[in-house]
Image 1 (tube, helix red, strand yellow):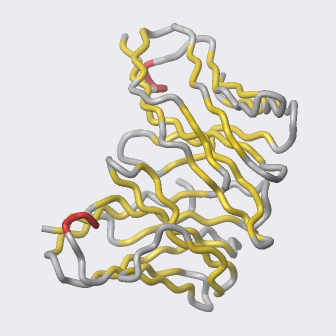
Image 2 (cartoon, helix red, strand yellow):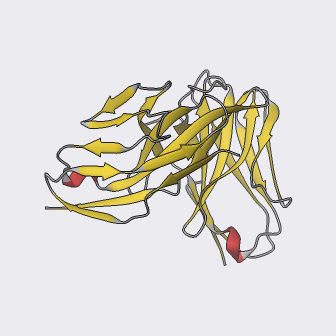
Length: 114
Length: 114
């Protein structure tokens, strides 16, 4: 158990809909990262937050947004969903944001868009 | 930009065979290097890491040495077990705008057969 929790574990929805994925980092960790894992794209970095502020953006679509709240939990919002958004979405956390930091991954949310 | 190249799988080995998964990287700074493992149905977890040239990371019988001269971080294990069946990700951590940015390889699926 990494100490990172993600809800829900599974999500099935229809095209055009909007969903919210939630992540609680390990106790004391200030950095939160979101990743998308699909069969054809591998593990893609989406976005990073550090202590409530956005710090880095990766391959995140404009239809997607995220935020980190004062209690450090984070939410990833996916809107106008398309079939191709079906994937595993992972949240990871780390204590800080240094080069040597280990990222601790949650169990993921499996999203299926029908 | 930074990149990580690792051998494509799947790799199928018999139990007690020797394992090598190749990983090479390109980076402009002084990155830290990681191997993460993903067991079926789970999130990624740290297997080992090395933070400077010539460092050797080791864990659970796995080893990898940070080779700056060949920009490599190959993963090895002398005798694999069925329980080692998983997907292995090589990753590079560097600073971008003062914050950690991690670049993952595509992942190599290892299947160990009895």
